[in-house]
Length: 378
Image 1: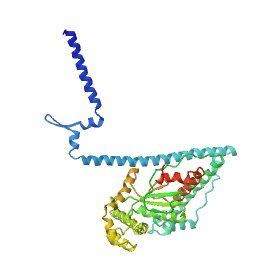
Image 2: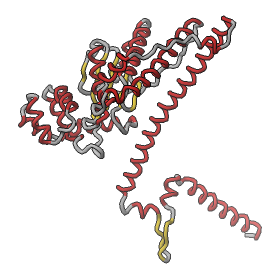
Image 3: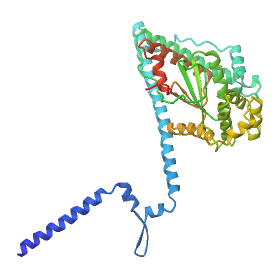
């Protein structure tokens, strides 16, 4: 074999080895490459990242799960806030367009048109009525005279907002300016104890904690809208005990599940929210007796693994959505984080009833809404 041929074969062999090594290196995924990262050496021994993790893999799994959970929570907050900003900016665009058209039609400035907005004055009766209807917001520890100025200021601001909304709603209608932006919704199964008719066009799914004071405040608002809309609103309760903050929340949730099995969920639900200071195991056992539960069966139910599973299923559903606080409401899938006023609830309910009525003309009104509540195929 001459030297030229030998050199060619040698170079070809070295090239094959290089290509094979490169291919093997490219086949490693980023995760595999990271696992083989050398974190330390002991003489000639290399200690890799994977070897360190293998000492306590469960701890790293928990970190990863927490990271993913926080991502879901941030995603939900981002999407809700992004939609709110989009709605706000769209309203500004449409209102300004309507204002420009009206000003041009009249031959006046936009400020002259805005001068037509009439804001009614807040009456003493309104201030008193708000104080009486919102004990949790005004606090029973305050005298009426002390908080009346703040209530009047709040109601005045609300009057101004309502008058402005009415003005621009009429102006948009006059010039056929219509928003096509649909409400932001999340498909949340309406699975759980329910109040109201299954055929109601509006379903409110509530994730709540029986020891949460804000859930207690919201309860009065929910009871009020259910009383006013017996045919139009349905409330579905789902458990989200925040045990890190409320030590009796899980016990209360388990008690509610056991009451539900005995057909007494809402009696237990109402009693626990009416006295959130009495949620210790002994207090709950006494409450079970008072609402007519068989105490022996109730105690056995508390120890049943299926009872804890029922609560954990709701908690898992909340976690999958990205919910990390209570109360959290979904009005036909429209998310509301935290307490919401009776007025806002009424506006949302009225809007959903209107939408269901409008869509029913196309044959998909209530059915379309039920899909968002997990009652039918989307």
